[in-house]
Amino acid sequence: MTDYLKFWQIEEPVYLSPRQPGELYLPDRLNKTFSEIKNLCLTSIPLITVVGASGSGKTTLLKWLYDAIPVKQADVILGTVALPEQSPGWLIPQVGKFLGVHTHSLTEIVKRLFDLREEKRKLVIMIDSAHLIQTTEACSEIISLLSIADLAGSHLTFILAGRSSLDSLVESTPELKTRVGLQVSLEPWTEDEALTYLNARGKAANLNFEFTQALVAEITLKAGGIPAVINQEAEKILMQAAQSQEKKPSLVISSKKAPPKATPEKNIDPQPSTSKTVKLSSLFQRPGQSDKE
Image (cartoon, rainbow, N blue to C red; front, side):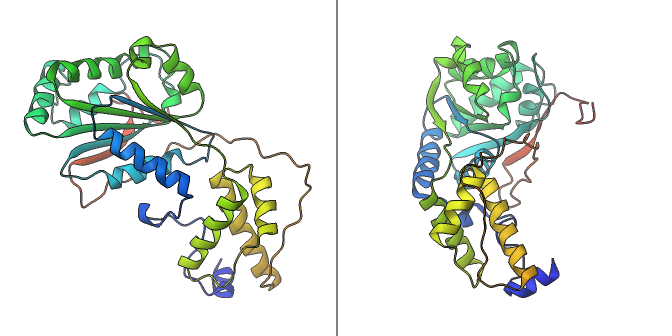
């Protein structure tokens, strides 16, 4: 790795290193989508769904929103469903903890939602890997919280992000389907979008190299247009170039090669922003539950 960084005269890997939300260099259509979701979740829309394949940018979107929603306007919870859920018990304890209700009492949560209304603040709950909510029964806590918010006259918005099965679950759950204000599908990137992205991010990292249209066409084909895989392939090319001491790397793949199959998503527990103490990120799981169970 040291030789690789030294060869390209950079301090860290260009495409696999974590970036702040403001340094994502996303395609224009995604910037517009992200901004639309941000604006809508600060209104009275109760439910927004975001679906896409593994690596399509769902977690990136939620992290961007977590950082972008003004702290003066809303309290934000960002969490990841840790394990497949088929019954209630995974959500309300975490929400109660965030609201300072240690008994997890719905009555106490109602009082806190009334307080938020008086403070003229929103509550935004963002749930990553929401496709792991597998039954209508497991959705009951979301439905209950939305109903309580309606009674309290407070503004509560859920943003659920997951794979395509999430849309099927919402569609089959009338209490959720009628509340959906926006459905977003994160589509694969085009060659032009990947080209603009790779070179913008490379320039920001002071990388003395620009990807050509032909090279990006091969990368995009191999990655199936999935951003996470595009990053992996771009970094791999730079590393191979460093090994061969070649400043003009190339990639050769068959034009008939199918895109790689989606790999299972890792449950990421993003760290909360230290400058925004009213925000919380965590795993949504039952008390006492761990990933090892």
